[in-house]
Image (cartoon, rainbow, N blue to C red; front, top):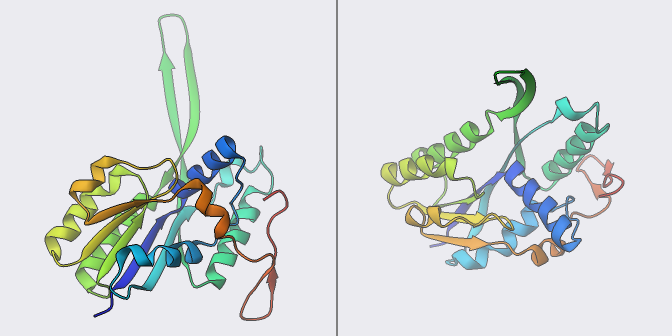
Amino acid sequence: MSTSVRFLVDGFNLYHAIREARRKGGIDCRWLDIRSLCESLLHTIGNGAHIAEIDYFSALAHHIESNRPGTVARHERYIDALRTTGVAPHLGVFKPKDIRYQSRTCEVRLRRHEEKETDAAIAAAIVEAAAQRDCSALTLMSGDTDLIPALKTARRLRPELKLYCLFPPYRANHAFRRHVDADFKISPGKLPEHLLPNPIMTTDGRAITKPEGW
């Protein structure tokens, strides 16, 4: 019997890995074809594995737009391109958080923005996959250990569901090994093999081009 695999992609964990690959090795792969990358790893699962669904979780960084104009538009264009390949995007938000530092002589107040809802959405999707039984294997593309409790819940709800962790470059974490059937690493050198066409054509005939500088 073939294995139906649902992929859950932690977009920011992957993005920071891509940035690190660019910084360390000069590899710029922001125009990454996530579907192609996932397909290339199906053989590691075996048993005629095929993709049931790919979910991409991220958020639009409106708060940095004043310092880095075009950030949101570039990200939206990339998400549009991913949709063309059948990847389903799920967007959280960035919310402001005021931080206060105080000593005996001074006080500093800073405002930071934290990504919200994304981790919760990924965790919910992990549990949903276990409850709905619409796939026989689940692969999490992330190295974020905050997601381990959701994996433990999925294992408890449905012990026969195969669980895999696919680490983006430089994001491997041994803490996952007790909670998944196997884990795999994506090497930085593999990323350039999986880039979206430029331009990529949508089903309605639109051409989506890679942002300048990507």
